[in-house]
Every structure is written in structure tokens, then in C-alpha cells.
Image (cartoon, rainbow, N blue to C red; front, side, top):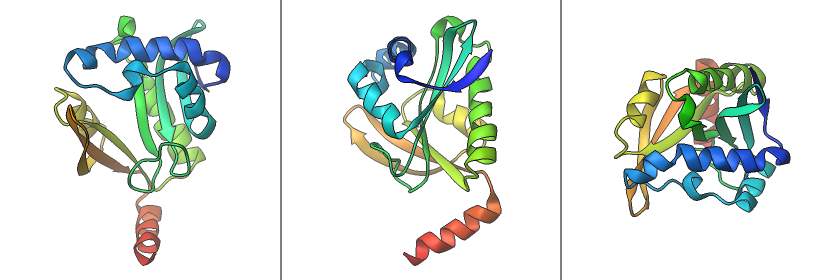
Length: 174
């Protein structure tokens, strides 16, 4: 088992995973961009964002993106924003998604990037995603009507309270 950053050669497998994993959400009437993403859009996405993969025996099991404020699709709060979290439905409930999430949060966001906080968004009408993020320590900070089929709920998780306080002081002065 390994965690790694996505490369161009992973695009076809990544696209297949996203389409498969987001099919259930589409059946709920919620249309996330990842459900129908094209390979050209994925190539653009990985140019300015970090996409982490979890593989086992060379097979892609789970994925999580970090959208940067300076990237092509920044989150709304000036912080890195998590998205396109998906696990191959054949492996649902086996902990692979949680393992990747924990790796990205601890090793990348906290230890490597030293982030004060991170944000994410999900559909308000999704039956369990908001509660999943709350259980992971995220707190609701806002919402927006970005698409006709759902309201997006935004969540934030403070990763380092001291640097978060300093960041908030600086951002409020601007």
C-alpha cells in the first residue's frame, strides 16, 4: 500500500475512479463536477492542485485533492480546500478513504505545508457527508447556492491554533 502524488499517467484510472465513486451521488440528484469530469479537465486540475492517491498492488483505491488558493479552482476562504474525495465503490467501508484522508491531513497539510486550517464543501442535501466531516473535526462556516441542484455547505478545520490566530489577524487587516 502506498500514498503518492498523482501524475499525468494516472489520469485515465483517476477519471474512472471518480466517475464510479460519484455515480451514487448523482443518483441522489446531486451533481458534483467530479462525476462527469473529462480527462482534459483533470489535466488542468493537476497542473495547479495536489491530488493524492492511495494504491494497493498497483490499483488506485482512493483519492483526495488539495485545491490551492492560487490554483485554477480556489476555495472561497483563502485557504487550501479539500475536494474530489473518492474511494472505489468495490472497496467501500474498508478504511482506504479514511487512511488516505488521515495521511493527507497529518503528513501533507500539517507536517509538510504547516497549514493553519483547511476548508471543504459538500452538498447540504447529501444524506451523510456533512456528518462525516463533522465527525472528522470540521465545523460549518458558511454556505452558497452554486448550482441549481444543491446548496454547498462549507466547513473548516483548524490544524494549528496559534498560526490560525496569526493568519486571521493578518487577513483581517487587508
